[in-house]
Length: 104
Image (cartoon, rainbow, N blue to C red; front, side):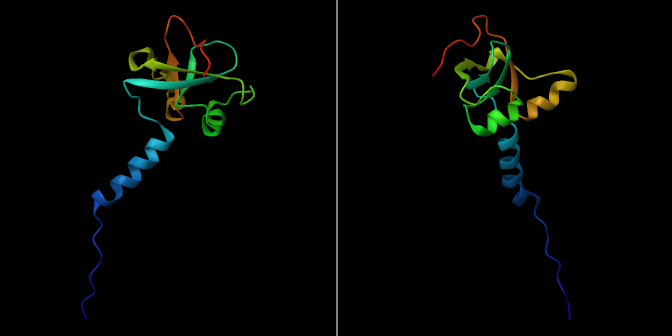
């Protein structure tokens, strides 16, 4: 009796891995919606004002106290140094001169 072991196709796992990574670290598009909670500052979360983003932001401000803006990809920087980990959660540093002042 000859028992065949199933072969693992590495390409079969690619969609699962890419979907998992996308949910943890959103990709930055040419125009990106960003959200921030609390007083004006340079740290933002990629994406809209979702409960997930609010939790991942680690903010002490209430969920409903947020600002939303669509910014160019070039205005966002990935965190550097030890804070690169925050980038995996969706944090970016916004370098726009006008700040985030518009509410949606």
